[in-house]
Length: 255
Image 1 (tube, rainbow, N blue to C red):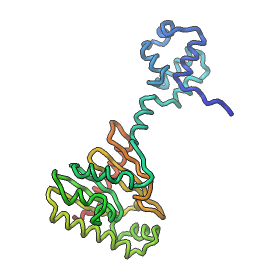
Image 2: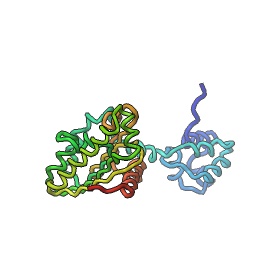
Image 3: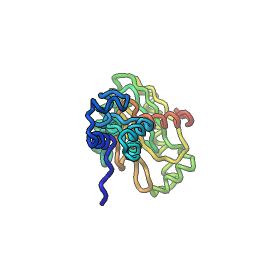
Image 4: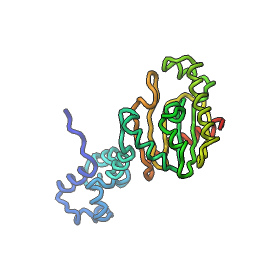
């Protein structure tokens, strides 16, 4: 089996040493500082393609340095990507109490669901206690699947229910949320209906997000759940929150 190609930093150091060049001797040839060269060699940074090509020429690397720079990711970027998913769970059960605990004191709640029965519709559902009894004001936005759309009928078939029975579950959740909206103090709740085919189930509580998927044969709470904290330039956080905002902006408000 072929050995994997070395990362840019490792290859740069190997080539520099193979030519008998110390950092002090190599630095004037590059027109870059020794500290930056050190960052390249340790993997903390990766040069731009034009700089990598110049280094390749200086060390007579035959294109190997330029190729390595194109495929090497800085260590800092690797750490940031890994940290975007804090934890994952085989299903909702192990993290349910954490979601409830956070939601009880949260100021913001965004939910993208299908029927919402297990999230807010039933007395023992995941988030109903947090909506019903507040010590601080909560602004909640909830997206549910439109019970009368084609996607609802399609989803009913995926989980082996009739369209009428499936739609009745969504309407039941809407009625239960209306009860909360009328009676719960310190609760500002808005509910809208979307018509696109459901894929994701997301729960955002302040700066923490839990994401799972739906598919034929299983519900969102039964699939793997990923815990995603808000992080600087976090792609997952930004993407899921932007998706929710876009869907909410185009959904039909009913509460």
